[in-house]
Image (cartoon, rainbow, N blue to C red):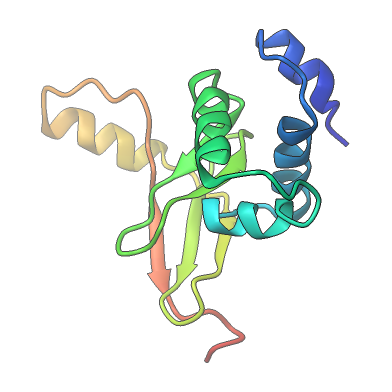
Length: 133
């Protein structure tokens, strides 16, 4: 269990019930869109807006303890930052799942094939999940 309050304080962000609830939602459900977070939080905070969620997520992404996962042809999902990993996404139901694979060879090939300094990777595999097959 992540200590959300200390994590927010360590990153110089004010501890608010909304921020704690965002972190709890991401920790509990993993990959969530802004709309998904809104649906989770609107019952608890009837005055919360999409703009509040955007603003708070952007602050957390800027501090690098929440990551935005950009998935082609879908809305971005957000997750709590963790060890380097890639993602699987279902073209049918939209499910997003973590997958840990060694990208060292791919990164090395990209570096030797170009004069590009790679700082970060975001590899997303798309297909059909086992539930939709």
